[in-house]
Image 1 (spheres, helix red, strand yellow):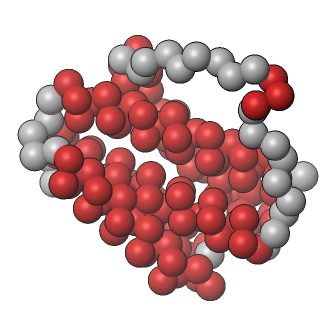
Image 2 (image 1 turned 30 degrees about the horizontal axis):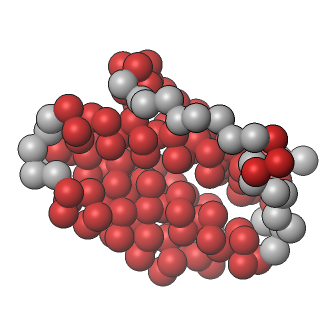
Length: 143
């Protein structure tokens, strides 16, 4: 499970970085840095943690998919196609991944009906969230 997921996490990290790139990052609000003690504590590598991270990642992909087709048109299926790749690599989590993807899609659909600056900002925020999740998974399962 670990090597296969490390590959998935690294792919997600690379895809999110490339797809949403510098223009979206330039619009991201800077968050104040937390003191060193308040930053996230390392969590044990449990099945529950893994499932939670997969669920969050699938929500990010679903939300990103909605925002991408909202702004770039329905022909852009990058994130849906990418999700299919994740599903093929993690078949035992199929139902959970699909639920998360759909939940993320619906959440962004309920927030945005037009591609505007707010939608672009939301895409940048999803990018940052996806990078955090993928980076955490890669750090835990990439060894």
